[in-house]
Length: 259
Image (cartoon, rainbow, N blue to C red; front, side, top):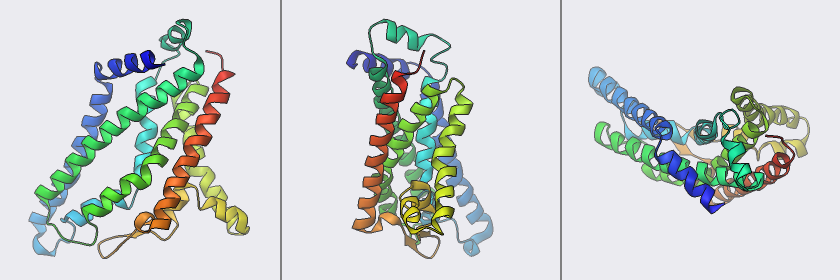
């Protein structure tokens, strides 16, 4: 599996796909802060959003962004593996389907982490350079979001690999992923309004955990799930559970899937 991972890392670093994706995110990050800075100059002191706090709050208030981005990366890296014969070649060379699956998980995670570090660094630096340093949401809130959401984002990435390896069409795989991560949590939430046990389960699903658990991040205050030690622990445990569940699911399901 080590050789497979090395070859995949070599392939990724020598193709434009991941570089282009990261470059697009970097440009979007800069664009957001440039727009806020220009709007502040045009409207003057009356414009309240040309601050680092508002810029950071865009990310802090929407932690599921990390899950969405991490789900896209495996699709970008391994789209068309069946059609171009890459998967068959790997299997024919003696690498088991399970090793390929875990290899894809490791490679995609490494690529995601590198991309995240670059994008966040540019986002923060452009905010510091272009915007006023004021407001309740600080760089500490942004930095503390990373360990809170990291394992959950990796679970999202692994589930994306499972969905797209199980289903030939990438578009259908993405839809299945969205059902698992967005639709199912909402269904559990509304059922849970009548049944307490279901509600407790629903509130541990990331979409509900970050969306309906009392998070308040705006121009006047910053209250996040991970701002307390118990909240941070819940985020980490949910991430670990997700990684375990989707890793086992992938290992078992992909063994039975024909290439």
